[in-house]
Amino acid sequence: MRTFGVEEEFFIVDPYTGLPVAPPAAARAHLLALSVDGTRTVAEFLACQVESNGPVCTHRDEALASARTYRAALARATLDMGLQAVALGTPPRLPEAPAVVSPGDRYRAITSLCEGIATEHYLCGLHVHVGIEDTASGVMALNEIRRWLPVLTACGSNSPYWRGSDTGFASWRNIHYRRWAVQGIPPHFTNEQDYERRMKFIFDSDVVLDAGHISWGARLSAHHPTLEVRVADTQLNATNSVLLALIVRSLVDTGLNAATPVLQPSAEALYLAQWQAAKFGLHGNHLDPLDGTKTSATRMMRSLLDHIQHALKQNGDFEYVSAGLERLMEHGTGADIQRTRFHRGGFNAVLDEAAAAIAA
Image 1 (tube, one colour):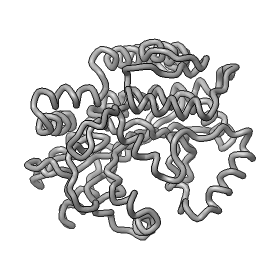
Image 2 (image 1 turned 180 degrees about the vertical axis):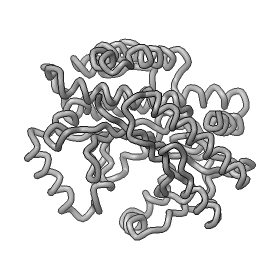
Image 3 (image 1 turned 60 degrees about the vertical axis):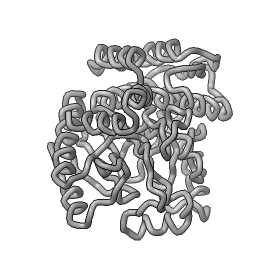
Image 4 (image 1 turned 90 degrees about the horizontal axis):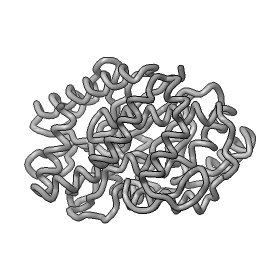
């Protein structure tokens, strides 16, 4: 069974103002030392963020238990500091001053190169790593998963608000990411040699500092034998994080083991589909990844489940994922839940929901 791992990014906010806040040095050091059930904490780009790096998992129960335990521990730790941790793709309220970037030579170099982008990078995502055998198989899986990135974006949308206003998008984080030099849907690669040639071209440019600076929605890790998918916003609850991780694992399995669909969507079709997914979430029109036709969110989800059902059943995840997708369609994504809470109690209700979901 193919291994996978989950990384989740969180904002630290002031519970009274709702604004992202950089904890004092001692408190920050305490947070970064937090390690629970194989999940450790690492610094993120902004000082008001932390990232959890979950363990390498084989079964969903491992990932779910680890994510829930870590989130509860993070909630307690921040509460003890008089702060709150929230799982939102973008914070609904932002300070007027530029964001404080985390210390470190790499972060300083990125900020120096792209200061106007870097100091507004209030974005938190869910990153799913899936084990691959080698670069060649990774390129093959990358070619096949790229058509499904808009679907994952729609399912994982959790960032409708920005600077105190509704953006009109389900995932404003994905739209905001478009400002970086290398982002969006990765290109289709002919083979491993084509991949390496094009990566060399990117690294030889003067706008990409290293492999971690490549912001494609899916990429091959430079440090681990994994394919990383990063289009989903960070999720309100651990259940949806693991749901998306299991879908990604099954997409990799299917891409490496099943016959390649005849249709290879064009770059412009996928670019448009990604924008549609960020705009509408699980509403409006979408692109069917298998035949390239316009379709509804319901049919798009059915295409996804049909496509990966064999891999899901082999992994023992079919019931969990099918129930999870049904729940998303019935109750909505994080973006839908945020908007519902806002209409009931404003941004305070949104932040209370996000904090409660972590502590649960």
